[in-house]
Image 1 (cartoon, one colour):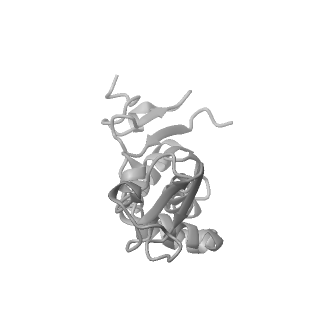
Image 2 (cartoon, rainbow, N blue to C red):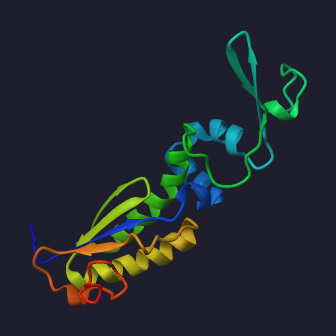
Length: 177
């Protein structure tokens, strides 16, 4: 609806591996506290989970459970940092602090539009404002999430805007060709 506006597309570097777990758990407490026991089971700092098969059934328990069979190295799952892609919780745990940071940037700028799916985000606003907001997002996400943008994937677009307003390092800027 505003062809002179600019859009910046963003992709974080290895969000699942770099997201700060403390920030994830804080966001989970705010948004979905009922999932805390499950998240602690798989990603709690002092609780490697145990899994074993018994007659085609999968059982899982915390390591000190009296119902667990004797442990072997092959049936212990240890997790220390980040989240595993494919885990039922990993996308939620990785996204929550990132989306909180994006929501804060958007609250501070009423004209900014932000659309996000997992670690891919799009920012839209008038030229100078969108690049300012993107810079603030970079600082906030680094501090509040522990992640950074993959600058090789950041792109800017505008159907009718002046691309000279875009930072020269961004793909799509006047300087990038």
